[in-house]
Length: 94
Image 1 (tube, rainbow, N blue to C red):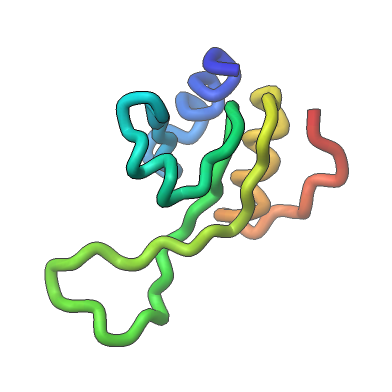
Image 2: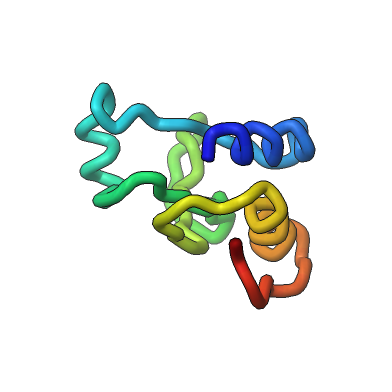
């Protein structure tokens, strides 16, 4: 899935941040994110409505969707369009 993920990341440039996490090296983060199988895609968004966030602190991330299993670039792009740019919900993922 790595080539598909990288192709989707190139398509969006700086509009969407794509991050890979080595779950063997980052076990605490993998546990915190409840990653149980690979590959796992998490679609996270900043929550602008969180009150009491201290100045200089990062906004709290909100999970929009979790998908376990490999996807092709077109499906990753469709999900990004839906979650981040107001596109239509994908009806079929592959």
